Image (cartoon, rainbow, N blue to C red; front, side):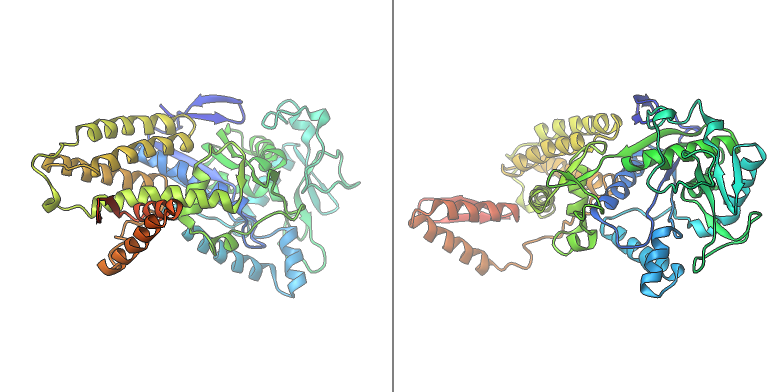
Length: 473
């Protein structure tokens, strides 16, 4: 039974989708005016993992993540470059999709609608709000009248309406009845892109985009709405208000929000200038390491980002990959009829299958789930370190197949299991061991141990004898 921490109810709720074995899921995507930073990568990874796990548990998931391709920041960027908003959007959407490939984001079956492709749906929704008295036109702009949704406004962000102030993207002007009212439509200014509307030429406000697109693809009610914590207010709060007032229905039943990324203990922020582009990180660490790093913490908790943290994640992931490689390099001619039958590994595998589901069912606790997988890896290595018979060989293969499936398909970590030592000649391995023997003679135990441990990470096991060192893959 899957449970989700619902931001709206502030409780751990049992997940019951509207349709049996079908899940509708909408996640707020990027505003495409620049390359994404590491903070933008987190929700992409988190909600892709949620989708993958729901599919693993037998659900069919309809997943929508939008692109905001018209926005004040995009207009500013276009003006600075002497370009157009359309050109800026195309460039950074392509860059975003390229980055998503590195993170192994599952594109199959995903819908990625653009705001500019749904202008008419937004206009229709705004007209409905005006007709019902929830919005008003003012000098070519249209604003949502928050006072008409007074009782429920603030329910998501747990704030009282009298204490609320306009969010960062809400421009307060004399044209508004209340400082809390937010823009649904903005009259065009010189040099800005615009569309024709009943209120004159203009463009949509930010919040109306997601309401119109989610309504088009899911109707008045759907299962999961996701995004970063920074979107709770005002964006998601405003989505709820305008969607319920225009269309009725329950809108989103479960609200999921991932935590912030901290840089050296301080929340990453473009205003502070402490953000790091994903592309720059990918120059030093692979996408699979970044994804693994992100999943080592619960998605709702803040994460501290640093090169040191990523390096530790790289080492940990290599341990898993090397265990898989060791199994794939085994063959039947390495079996020992007198060896063990893998009974201990078989039991740990069974426990792992159950514990993994228990961890992920509890609000997608990837940190705990990965810990469970490491317990399996330890037992896997233990079995490999000792002689095993035919039955033990089959257990090893079954365990590796499960581990690979969970890592690659369910958690989305694109592990590589090609034989890492296939290009290493015997002479090269022997030369490395010769250097290690010299280090031992010189009583340089630190270097000797480093060589031993590094070889182990590559799947090369060594055993020191009286006069020689034996090694095997």
